[in-house]
Image 1 (cartoon, rainbow, N blue to C red):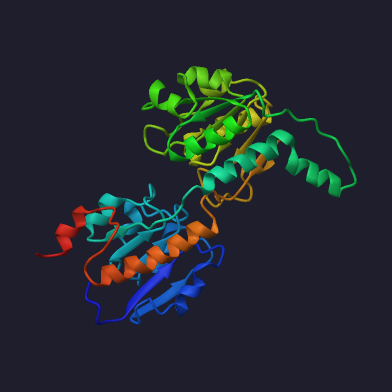
Image 2: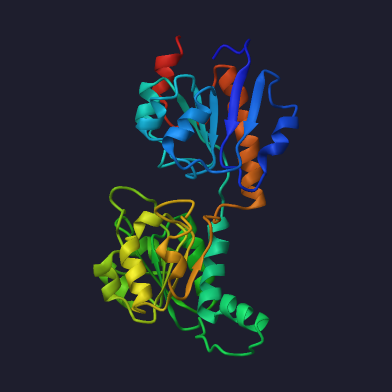
Length: 331
């Protein structure tokens, strides 16, 4: 990109007001005119209208989607940045077809592990409920199970899943896992027992989801799978909302087919104020904060600046759609 003219840049969905300090960061080239939008723009037409004049757009994880219908209506967009190493809500093919570079950043790390166990312990021991009851004059009303000896089922045993398993083993839990690509040998290396999907659903006292969202994993946990589960199972999802069929989860919670759920990710984000999950019993809800840690955000911040500098120097890094480079750069 020619960098002798002013370049308009916007960071979207800065809910925590973290990136405002970038305006005063002298590492950011002086030709950058930086804007920060703190509130989420839900309507795609409104989004297009507000960012159509920007050359560089930064999305914070999947808070704002960039499908073909949006990308094709942003004629000035040249660089689309996502925090983290990838973003399933960005249409990379459309970006490539429209000569837009998409790049990622370092970051994310192990934050979902912390949150997973926060949700598990709070649900199982009723911490969030007890806190509310004590503040309203009640004392000692819940009897919760111990984690020791219980079965932790992991849907996915990747980087995050392995760390969640390690904590479960430290609690004295029996840890089982399944995914399409998992083998007995790999599971055993981490003290985990490989089982098939049906066994995972039937035996888990706590089922925690740690796989990537794709066409193959969308709706992987639906009514059929929930009906196999114990009536006292807890379901935890810090991965991606659509992996669980949301309607089936809501029905199971309302009918008390399951004991509870800790949910950090949803089909629609931010969660609408009238969403039925907000009124389901024994549901602990967090606003997709698995990756929201100081360490992750500092890595995002530095990565964004590096991406901007290298792009302006015609040498972009961490490019997620490398085919675009042959289109926009001549040898």
